[in-house]
Image 1 (tube, rainbow, N blue to C red):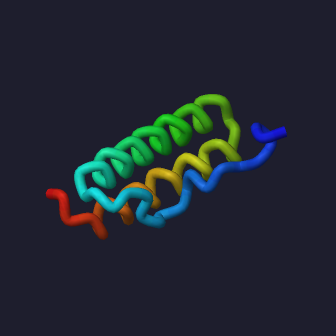
Image 2 (cartoon, rainbow, N blue to C red):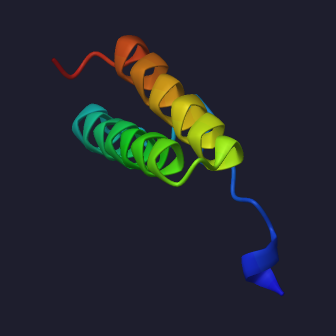
Amino acid sequence: MAHDIDRPDDSPATKHANSVAEETSATGQRVKGAIKEELGDALDDEDMEDKGARENAAGKIRQQKNDAV
């Protein structure tokens, strides 16, 4: 099943050629990662917490590479 495959949400690879779209997407990645990180902490789920931290860090890297702002 497709939902069994872990999507590469924690990848710092650029996903959009347009810098504004890339900035928006990277911000969303950071927010999603931060939510997972906090929820994982609250639920005592280390895997979720670690995944969230990786996603948040990847979003930061994408924003640093981007020249939108």
